[in-house]
Image (cartoon, rainbow, N blue to C red; front, side):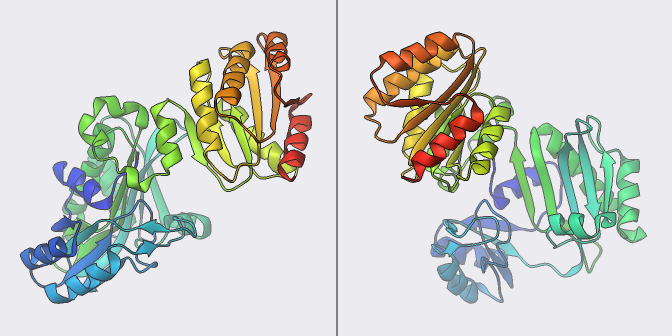
Length: 385
């Protein structure tokens, strides 16, 4: 689950990470009131779930409250396009009005899960304010790393990183405190990403999180009811929101071949083989191993709500989800939803013969693939008509 910058800063502040003074605004009037209460120069920042907001025109500095009102009026309600939103962009529905600070240096701090080690890794770099992906690709030596153990970053690790990215001795204690606080927040909230970019040193030697991003493990939200309430459904694809209600893993893509698969690995292999066959997947949809006929029906309904889908490939390896259960759900969905697009089915595993018989006896027009490649070639051909 993603949250907005102002929400992430509120969480970090609870764990004693220094953040600028700021207020969220949903209207121009609220933006004006926030700018007046902060006094002096302020930053008007669009709040969407994407990076690159400054390059897209969503972050502007105002010298006073009057200019902040003008900028808020321009940014609020705009469709902000960045390298992370895609060409369709995101509608800006809230702003963060924040004090400006005298920036001396811009640095980078971040915590992510290293899946090779199976542990979180704390990263620090002197190349703050830049896309960390570009730094990692072009100058990886500029990123220093420390592997974390619960309950978080040790002071000696923080000092090693702080000196390594060139923080002066007079500012080390403040930086170390901010780094260890960031790691405490990461573990305490079951975060998957906690990133401060840039992490700044001010002219008077303070360490401050000028911008930050946090995402959380969906599977741990039952332990964090307060965090679950921060979810902004306006920032998510409506079909993905709908899928989450039924425990389905769905991600909308821009192709024409709808995919329904059980298991994330098989789903990724299915998308690959569709591309190999010359088509383009319209979605990632993993119904999971424990799906029942009702979930399969809901999965079908969500998948077909995407009007770009012109053919569907069902690729099931029957294990916990038996082939006959899947076939029953597919037939029920096809009848109830009056499905008009062609459907190609490839099944293997538990009760596969029974599953195929259910499809044949349905009287509906299903195409059966002999194997994954055959099924992919057939669905791509059908999608092209």
